[in-house]
Length: 490
Image (cartoon, rainbow, N blue to C red; front, top):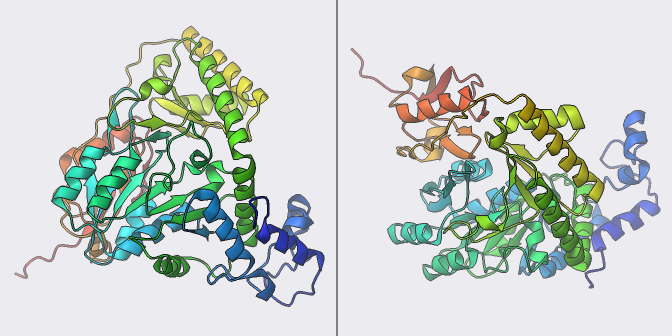
């Protein structure tokens, strides 16, 4: 088949044109049974292909027809031996990667700033995480990737690890020397799993960082919906045969995937792949040019700084994606949260992310010159307004604490007998829940770690400056869930 073809999308459209009488789910029956207002907004075409795995339409859990063909075309486009479609988002694909290589008691080497889906998979699998501290950019206040040296040290100490997980590129678009990391891991016969959530487009342009498959990685969970043009929640899992089995990948992915798979999401993956494979280079070239124009204009605005290639050169900043606009706003005496709110209220502009020191804007083929000019104009106005109302404001420095000692595997801690204790009385106890503070996106506690006063103080400082805390049952963080202590009976 040719990359210009879309076997899945085309097959769905042809099936809908036949207008069959449906005595199967979904119950809205091509839209006639759905809320009329919703139907008018969504449209009959979308509802006509909101179908399930009946015979003519193949089955994602055991594909033999149009889904199989669409996945094979995707594998060819991404340079993989096998590509699996995910309707569970990249989170489902990431959990599949971890659970493919890890079982109870197995070690897996991971950066501390992993997505929560990695830690969820570690809990489900019963694996033990071996953490590597990511490199911290103290000027920007963000975390980068892991270094080749840290991976080498981790494997020297834990050659029995079942996998090395790498975030490439990071949320902020920074890449490590992935090819070298793969070479080091493979010298130990250890597979490399890549969280490529923010890098679907990098495979299709020579001026962007190497993709996971180009670097020789064994598996990569890739968010096509984030930057590749498919619908939200649709992702792919690329696999290279050798150190991992594609049959086991299919088995694990099927365990984690709904049997009522969305054909709208699957079709959007099929057409997104076609566009990336046939037009990707030209689309991404225009996107890079638009991003570079925007970066240059922002850097001419007083007290604003948009990161460029000058960030490269450290051990953890091997390459970067220029379509990610990291805009440092601390020169304005404002926080990123302040700026995000101002842009929303004054210009109806929504940013991808904000933290203490920065906002992050992403430029994709869906953006126009008019869009970026509005952002530039808004930031110019903000700079003037902030200057007119300037007051001396020293933003606090949030330092990263040490990683706590892991006393139990995350799985054992998560499923242990637990109790809730006051936040300030939890020092020395073993935590049974996650606590994550953003930025820099690194878990402060995972289940099984011993709570220290230093980490509690770190959490309090983050809350004081307005950084959101995620994970604990008690959103107000007046208490923490810990492992229940069984004291001697008097």
